[in-house]
Image (spheres, rainbow, N blue to C red):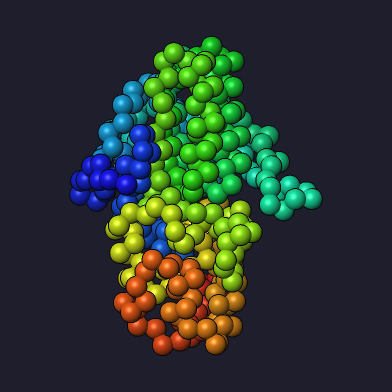
Length: 318
Protein backbone atom coordinates (compact mmCIF):
# COMPACT_ATOMS: atom_id res chain seq x y z
CA UNK A 1 0.00 0.00 0.00
CA UNK A 2 1.46 3.34 -1.04
CA UNK A 3 0.33 6.93 -0.75
CA UNK A 4 -1.44 7.98 -3.94
CA UNK A 5 -2.93 11.42 -3.31
CA UNK A 6 -3.81 13.63 -0.38
CA UNK A 7 -5.94 16.74 0.04
CA UNK A 8 -7.62 18.29 3.11
CA UNK A 9 -10.16 15.80 4.43
CA UNK A 10 -9.13 12.80 2.33
CA UNK A 11 -6.13 10.57 1.68
CA UNK A 12 -5.94 7.88 -1.00
CA UNK A 13 -3.64 4.85 -0.78
CA UNK A 14 -3.07 2.59 -3.78
CA UNK A 15 -3.24 -1.18 -3.26
CA UNK A 16 -2.86 -2.11 -6.92
CA UNK A 17 -3.78 -0.72 -10.31
CA UNK A 18 -7.25 0.75 -9.97
CA UNK A 19 -7.71 -0.38 -6.35
CA UNK A 20 -7.50 2.18 -3.53
CA UNK A 21 -8.12 2.66 0.17
CA UNK A 22 -9.61 6.06 0.97
CA UNK A 23 -9.76 7.56 4.44
CA UNK A 24 -11.83 10.55 5.56
CA UNK A 25 -12.94 11.81 9.00
CA UNK A 26 -16.54 10.94 8.18
CA UNK A 27 -15.92 7.35 7.10
CA UNK A 28 -13.57 6.75 10.03
CA UNK A 29 -16.39 7.83 12.35
CA UNK A 30 -18.85 5.49 10.63
CA UNK A 31 -16.54 2.48 10.81
CA UNK A 32 -15.68 3.13 14.45
CA UNK A 33 -18.84 4.29 16.19
CA UNK A 34 -22.03 2.21 15.83
CA UNK A 35 -23.99 4.97 17.57
CA UNK A 36 -23.87 6.87 14.27
CA UNK A 37 -26.96 5.60 12.47
CA UNK A 38 -30.00 6.78 10.51
CA UNK A 39 -29.62 10.11 8.74
CA UNK A 40 -26.40 10.89 10.60
CA UNK A 41 -24.88 7.75 9.13
CA UNK A 42 -25.95 8.32 5.52
CA UNK A 43 -25.02 12.00 5.70
CA UNK A 44 -21.48 11.20 6.84
CA UNK A 45 -21.12 8.47 4.25
CA UNK A 46 -22.16 10.84 1.48
CA UNK A 47 -19.79 13.54 2.75
CA UNK A 48 -16.94 11.05 2.78
CA UNK A 49 -17.71 10.05 -0.82
CA UNK A 50 -17.73 13.73 -1.85
CA UNK A 51 -14.21 14.12 -0.44
CA UNK A 52 -13.02 11.00 -2.24
CA UNK A 53 -14.47 12.17 -5.57
CA UNK A 54 -12.79 15.56 -5.23
CA UNK A 55 -9.48 13.90 -4.43
CA UNK A 56 -9.61 11.15 -7.05
CA UNK A 57 -10.99 13.30 -9.89
CA UNK A 58 -12.17 10.32 -11.97
CA UNK A 59 -12.58 10.71 -15.72
CA UNK A 60 -16.35 10.90 -15.95
CA UNK A 61 -18.69 12.73 -18.33
CA UNK A 62 -21.89 14.02 -16.74
CA UNK A 63 -24.27 13.02 -19.57
CA UNK A 64 -22.78 9.50 -19.69
CA UNK A 65 -22.65 8.84 -15.95
CA UNK A 66 -25.34 6.74 -14.26
CA UNK A 67 -25.48 6.06 -10.52
CA UNK A 68 -26.57 2.45 -10.05
CA UNK A 69 -28.40 1.91 -6.76
CA UNK A 70 -28.33 -1.65 -5.42
CA UNK A 71 -31.31 -1.68 -3.09
CA UNK A 72 -31.15 -1.09 -0.34
CA UNK A 73 -27.58 -0.85 0.93
CA UNK A 74 -26.42 1.05 -2.13
CA UNK A 75 -28.72 3.93 -1.26
CA UNK A 76 -26.62 4.65 1.82
CA UNK A 77 -23.70 6.13 -0.12
CA UNK A 78 -25.70 9.04 -1.55
CA UNK A 79 -23.63 8.98 -4.73
CA UNK A 80 -26.17 10.86 -6.87
CA UNK A 81 -25.91 13.82 -4.52
CA UNK A 82 -22.18 13.28 -3.94
CA UNK A 83 -21.41 13.68 -7.66
CA UNK A 84 -23.47 16.86 -7.71
CA UNK A 85 -21.69 18.29 -4.66
CA UNK A 86 -18.23 17.28 -5.88
CA UNK A 87 -18.49 18.45 -9.49
CA UNK A 88 -21.53 20.75 -9.66
CA UNK A 89 -23.44 18.21 -11.75
CA UNK A 90 -27.21 18.18 -12.18
CA UNK A 91 -28.02 15.97 -15.19
CA UNK A 92 -26.41 12.60 -14.42
CA UNK A 93 -28.75 9.60 -14.42
CA UNK A 94 -29.80 6.99 -11.87
CA UNK A 95 -30.82 3.36 -12.15
CA UNK A 96 -32.24 1.04 -9.50
CA UNK A 97 -32.35 -2.70 -8.88
CA UNK A 98 -33.09 -4.79 -5.84
CA UNK A 99 -30.48 -7.37 -4.82
CA UNK A 100 -31.11 -8.81 -1.37
CA UNK A 101 -29.07 -11.84 -0.38
CA UNK A 102 -30.27 -14.75 1.75
CA UNK A 103 -28.44 -17.74 3.18
CA UNK A 104 -28.90 -20.79 1.00
CA UNK A 105 -31.29 -23.36 2.41
CA UNK A 106 -29.30 -26.34 3.63
CA UNK A 107 -25.96 -24.53 3.53
CA UNK A 108 -25.72 -21.60 5.98
CA UNK A 109 -22.26 -20.66 4.67
CA UNK A 110 -23.41 -19.89 1.11
CA UNK A 111 -25.64 -17.12 -0.20
CA UNK A 112 -28.12 -16.54 -3.01
CA UNK A 113 -30.22 -13.65 -4.29
CA UNK A 114 -33.90 -14.09 -3.50
CA UNK A 115 -35.30 -10.55 -3.65
CA UNK A 116 -34.56 -9.11 -7.08
CA UNK A 117 -37.94 -8.22 -8.54
CA UNK A 118 -37.55 -4.46 -8.82
CA UNK A 119 -35.59 -2.96 -11.73
CA UNK A 120 -35.58 0.51 -13.26
CA UNK A 121 -32.58 0.47 -15.57
CA UNK A 122 -31.29 3.60 -17.29
CA UNK A 123 -28.59 3.04 -19.92
CA UNK A 124 -27.47 5.85 -22.26
CA UNK A 125 -25.64 4.93 -25.51
CA UNK A 126 -22.29 5.41 -23.74
CA UNK A 127 -22.31 4.80 -20.03
CA UNK A 128 -20.09 4.90 -16.96
CA UNK A 129 -21.60 3.41 -13.81
CA UNK A 130 -20.93 4.78 -10.34
CA UNK A 131 -22.17 2.68 -7.44
CA UNK A 132 -21.51 1.69 -3.87
CA UNK A 133 -22.40 -1.11 -1.48
CA UNK A 134 -21.17 -2.91 1.60
CA UNK A 135 -19.51 -6.12 0.38
CA UNK A 136 -19.19 -9.18 2.56
CA UNK A 137 -19.99 -12.38 0.65
CA UNK A 138 -20.19 -10.48 -2.65
CA UNK A 139 -23.48 -12.11 -3.70
CA UNK A 140 -25.38 -8.83 -4.15
CA UNK A 141 -22.47 -7.18 -5.97
CA UNK A 142 -22.04 -10.11 -8.36
CA UNK A 143 -25.76 -10.11 -9.16
CA UNK A 144 -25.85 -6.33 -9.58
CA UNK A 145 -22.86 -6.14 -11.93
CA UNK A 146 -24.14 -9.04 -14.02
CA UNK A 147 -27.56 -7.39 -14.32
CA UNK A 148 -26.02 -4.08 -15.37
CA UNK A 149 -23.73 -5.77 -17.90
CA UNK A 150 -26.70 -7.65 -19.37
CA UNK A 151 -28.70 -4.43 -19.66
CA UNK A 152 -25.87 -2.61 -21.46
CA UNK A 153 -25.48 -5.51 -23.91
CA UNK A 154 -29.23 -5.83 -24.56
CA UNK A 155 -29.49 -2.12 -25.38
CA UNK A 156 -26.47 -2.16 -27.66
CA UNK A 157 -24.77 0.48 -25.52
CA UNK A 158 -21.05 0.94 -24.82
CA UNK A 159 -19.68 0.64 -21.30
CA UNK A 160 -16.77 2.98 -20.53
CA UNK A 161 -16.00 2.40 -16.85
CA UNK A 162 -17.24 1.44 -13.39
CA UNK A 163 -16.41 3.37 -10.21
CA UNK A 164 -17.28 1.42 -7.07
CA UNK A 165 -17.24 2.52 -3.42
CA UNK A 166 -17.39 -0.02 -0.61
CA UNK A 167 -16.94 -0.74 3.02
CA UNK A 168 -15.98 -4.31 2.38
CA UNK A 169 -13.52 -7.10 1.99
CA UNK A 170 -11.38 -8.77 -0.69
CA UNK A 171 -14.35 -10.54 -2.23
CA UNK A 172 -14.99 -7.19 -3.94
CA UNK A 173 -11.93 -7.58 -6.16
CA UNK A 174 -12.71 -11.22 -6.88
CA UNK A 175 -16.13 -10.24 -8.25
CA UNK A 176 -14.70 -7.43 -10.40
CA UNK A 177 -11.86 -9.58 -11.70
CA UNK A 178 -14.36 -12.24 -12.73
CA UNK A 179 -16.37 -9.61 -14.65
CA UNK A 180 -13.39 -7.93 -16.28
CA UNK A 181 -12.82 -10.43 -19.10
CA UNK A 182 -16.47 -10.29 -20.14
CA UNK A 183 -16.61 -6.48 -20.11
CA UNK A 184 -13.41 -6.13 -22.15
CA UNK A 185 -14.65 -8.71 -24.63
CA UNK A 186 -18.02 -7.01 -25.11
CA UNK A 187 -16.93 -3.35 -25.08
CA UNK A 188 -13.98 -1.90 -26.97
CA UNK A 189 -14.63 1.33 -25.09
CA UNK A 190 -14.23 -0.28 -21.66
CA UNK A 191 -11.42 1.45 -19.73
CA UNK A 192 -11.61 -0.67 -16.57
CA UNK A 193 -12.94 -0.36 -13.07
CA UNK A 194 -11.84 1.68 -10.07
CA UNK A 195 -12.48 0.23 -6.61
CA UNK A 196 -12.50 2.43 -3.54
CA UNK A 197 -12.32 0.69 -0.18
CA UNK A 198 -13.37 3.13 2.54
CA UNK A 199 -10.89 2.93 5.46
CA UNK A 200 -9.72 -0.59 4.74
CA UNK A 201 -10.00 -3.91 2.98
CA UNK A 202 -11.54 -5.78 5.88
CA UNK A 203 -11.37 -9.60 6.24
CA UNK A 204 -14.66 -11.47 6.45
CA UNK A 205 -15.44 -13.80 9.35
CA UNK A 206 -15.72 -17.45 8.34
CA UNK A 207 -15.85 -20.81 10.08
CA UNK A 208 -12.06 -20.81 10.52
CA UNK A 209 -11.90 -17.38 12.15
CA UNK A 210 -10.92 -17.75 15.81
CA UNK A 211 -13.28 -15.35 17.60
CA UNK A 212 -15.54 -15.82 20.59
CA UNK A 213 -18.34 -13.90 18.88
CA UNK A 214 -18.85 -13.74 15.12
CA UNK A 215 -21.44 -13.99 12.39
CA UNK A 216 -19.87 -15.77 9.44
CA UNK A 217 -20.38 -14.35 5.98
CA UNK A 218 -21.39 -10.99 7.45
CA UNK A 219 -18.87 -9.57 9.92
CA UNK A 220 -16.09 -7.40 8.46
CA UNK A 221 -13.20 -7.58 10.91
CA UNK A 222 -10.26 -5.49 12.12
CA UNK A 223 -8.31 -8.73 12.54
CA UNK A 224 -5.71 -8.41 9.80
CA UNK A 225 -6.44 -6.95 6.38
CA UNK A 226 -5.22 -3.68 4.89
CA UNK A 227 -6.24 -0.51 6.70
CA UNK A 228 -5.42 3.15 6.28
CA UNK A 229 -2.88 4.37 8.87
CA UNK A 230 -5.29 7.12 9.88
CA UNK A 231 -7.99 4.55 10.56
CA UNK A 232 -5.65 2.40 12.65
CA UNK A 233 -4.64 5.41 14.72
CA UNK A 234 -8.28 6.37 15.24
CA UNK A 235 -8.88 3.07 17.07
CA UNK A 236 -7.17 4.57 20.10
CA UNK A 237 -9.78 7.32 20.44
CA UNK A 238 -12.19 5.00 22.27
CA UNK A 239 -11.68 1.48 23.63
CA UNK A 240 -15.03 0.33 22.24
CA UNK A 241 -13.97 0.99 18.65
CA UNK A 242 -11.47 -1.84 18.04
CA UNK A 243 -13.54 -4.52 19.80
CA UNK A 244 -16.82 -4.01 17.95
CA UNK A 245 -18.19 -7.19 16.42
CA UNK A 246 -18.28 -5.76 12.91
CA UNK A 247 -16.80 -2.73 11.19
CA UNK A 248 -20.17 -1.68 9.75
CA UNK A 249 -22.89 -4.09 10.99
CA UNK A 250 -25.96 -4.26 8.71
CA UNK A 251 -25.88 -1.27 6.36
CA UNK A 252 -29.53 -1.44 5.35
CA UNK A 253 -30.98 -1.50 8.86
CA UNK A 254 -28.40 1.02 10.07
CA UNK A 255 -29.88 3.57 7.69
CA UNK A 256 -33.54 2.59 7.46
CA UNK A 257 -34.47 0.44 10.49
CA UNK A 258 -32.68 2.06 13.44
CA UNK A 259 -34.33 0.02 16.20
CA UNK A 260 -33.52 -3.27 14.47
CA UNK A 261 -29.94 -2.12 13.93
CA UNK A 262 -29.43 -0.90 17.50
CA UNK A 263 -30.85 -4.14 18.89
CA UNK A 264 -28.29 -6.07 16.84
CA UNK A 265 -25.42 -4.04 18.29
CA UNK A 266 -26.88 -4.25 21.81
CA UNK A 267 -27.08 -8.04 21.65
CA UNK A 268 -23.37 -8.18 20.87
CA UNK A 269 -22.39 -5.95 23.78
CA UNK A 270 -24.67 -7.85 26.17
CA UNK A 271 -22.68 -10.96 25.28
CA UNK A 272 -19.39 -9.16 25.93
CA UNK A 273 -20.69 -7.93 29.29
CA UNK A 274 -20.83 -11.59 30.43
CA UNK A 275 -17.06 -12.04 29.97
CA UNK A 276 -16.34 -11.26 33.62
CA UNK A 277 -13.08 -13.23 33.72
CA UNK A 278 -11.69 -11.91 30.43
CA UNK A 279 -9.45 -8.84 30.42
CA UNK A 280 -9.76 -6.04 27.90
CA UNK A 281 -6.15 -6.67 26.84
CA UNK A 282 -6.84 -10.31 25.98
CA UNK A 283 -10.04 -9.43 24.13
CA UNK A 284 -8.27 -6.70 22.18
CA UNK A 285 -5.60 -9.21 21.12
CA UNK A 286 -8.38 -11.38 19.72
CA UNK A 287 -10.31 -8.63 17.92
CA UNK A 288 -7.52 -6.25 16.83
CA UNK A 289 -4.12 -7.85 17.47
CA UNK A 290 -2.13 -5.14 15.68
CA UNK A 291 -3.01 -2.51 18.30
CA UNK A 292 -0.97 -1.70 21.40
CA UNK A 293 -2.99 -2.54 24.57
CA UNK A 294 -0.99 -0.17 26.79
CA UNK A 295 -2.46 2.83 24.98
CA UNK A 296 -5.88 1.99 26.41
CA UNK A 297 -6.87 2.57 30.03
CA UNK A 298 -9.60 -0.01 30.70
CA UNK A 299 -10.00 -1.58 34.13
CA UNK A 300 -12.74 -4.07 33.24
CA UNK A 301 -13.98 -5.42 29.90
CA UNK A 302 -17.40 -6.32 31.29
CA UNK A 303 -17.84 -2.85 32.81
CA UNK A 304 -16.83 -1.25 29.52
CA UNK A 305 -19.40 -3.42 27.76
CA UNK A 306 -22.12 -2.48 30.21
CA UNK A 307 -21.40 1.20 29.59
CA UNK A 308 -21.94 0.63 25.87
CA UNK A 309 -25.12 -1.31 26.61
CA UNK A 310 -26.48 1.64 28.59
CA UNK A 311 -25.81 3.99 25.69
CA UNK A 312 -27.53 1.64 23.24
CA UNK A 313 -30.54 1.13 25.54
CA UNK A 314 -30.89 4.91 25.81
CA UNK A 315 -30.95 5.18 22.03
CA UNK A 316 -33.55 2.42 21.91
CA UNK A 317 -35.50 4.14 24.71
CA UNK A 318 -35.78 0.90 26.68
